[in-house]
Image (cartoon, rainbow, N blue to C red; front, top):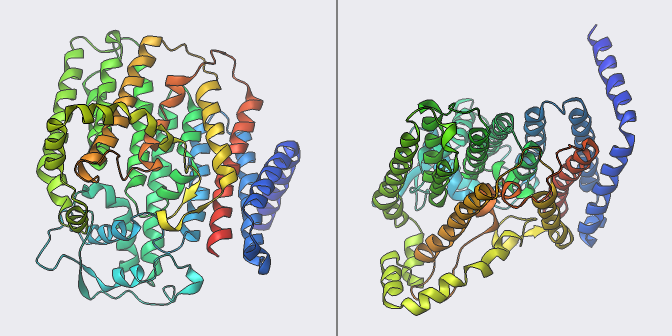
Length: 508
């Protein structure tokens, strides 16, 4: 009976593939072109692994395209499956602790796994286990270049200097659970990393699925922005970015839901949920506390009687919590890490920078007026991965991917008209977060008196991308084109596949 079931499954799957063969051919050609654009002489020497990954990417893509055709009315399921499939590939393919700052994120997850939610710096640093250092010692290596897949976890207590003390513990609960399970089951060393990464991408995929299901509008664009290859890459690591990106898109979806809700339907419960999400997001990444100001843009008639005042109260409470957290915990904790040495060597001081700004008003005005020139940070290096000094990706794809995202932001049709007043309001909040991110980097990472801002990266702005189609969309066509949606999904899946190919071509 089991054999019959398997036979029927593959028969049905094969027949469905034949129905979509023109789309599958399009996907195969897209993946082939992106693969050829990334090939180097090294890949021709021993191409077995590259061929295996190429075939795997083809199979996953074909499976996801067929799944999409059957679930066009259940896009939240599509979003979850797309992210989890390629996320798991990234979990296994990405070299050991190769993601930006993953060493420190992994160390914090290990501390969280044993209930150390508020790590304290003793005279020698923070206490972790030798297994953490064993993995860090193999950073940027692949599984084939080390013995971490056969080596046991060493639980001897050791000290480390940096553990992202300034970040909230709940940003590491998912990855911490993964590390805890690896230790509980007495698995080999690599599983602390792999299971930790898996729980992070599982959380990210779940949050995206919740967001797509919650949002009454722009579901396809939400999937596309959540499936940005670097977002999935970060989500499938030990980084807190899995929480930042995931909660960020849920906040946006919740905002969409409120502005499209029935009159007088937004009450205390909705305000409490939205405010809590903004607090979670803002404590993980301070500039995103400004998402709470989206409440100002929710039409007054959407609130229950007298609940509009509660909305203003929520904004005040969230802002106060953010300021207290930042002033009395996050910023002081930054000095309990390698960053203190960086501050001393590079003359970085938040108070010193503030004094400089106040004492040099003309220069400060020039600096602020120059912020639009930093918009290139949103379009540059969109298809590059790993550390700044060891980037890999594709110049070809990096040049065309922003055009794809820009096309979605400008041209994707939506059924519900959005007022210009609402668009402008959201644009101002996006601008506030963008500017706030740069000003925080200016205060906490740039030398005092510097005329440029250091330390920003493309990934810092990924949560904003979910709002771009809402703000910049110019296509008022109310008719949804299923063929266009299909092509958009194929390209989205294709770019994710290209990300897997980039890793296999450059790291193996």
